[in-house]
Image (cartoon, rainbow, N blue to C red; front, side, top):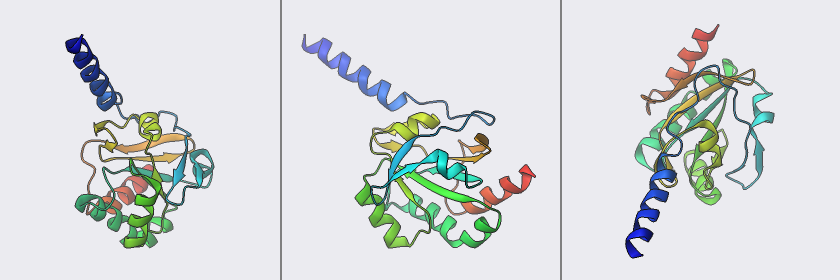
Length: 171
């Protein structure tokens, strides 16, 4: 019985951490989840998309080195991003209070989504490296569709430049 319990537990963990191993492809319909932001306020992704081209970027964990570099790349290039009509939603498996601390500490001008239940990552097909820690992945949404994604080589320091280049290539 103990062996069966161990096997079932391992299978469950494997299924959870690898449940989403195929990020949405270009052309797919953009998911429209509703999730909490850093202030525990509901954010309806559909409403955000209606306002224009949206970068939805997933990062592993708030207040860590690479994730800070990535967020700061977007913050430091905020004027250039907004001139291109890009709005941003950052997403990680952190709780709202951790997202708030991260956002406030680095003065990010965009909302951070607390995907502590994993529903947003699952909707986008973003794989978990372990429970609550999602692979660095980015999507551009325009007109209700995924128009660009960066699933294998999402950068930290040059993320904003990569996104701007992608938006320019769409025209």
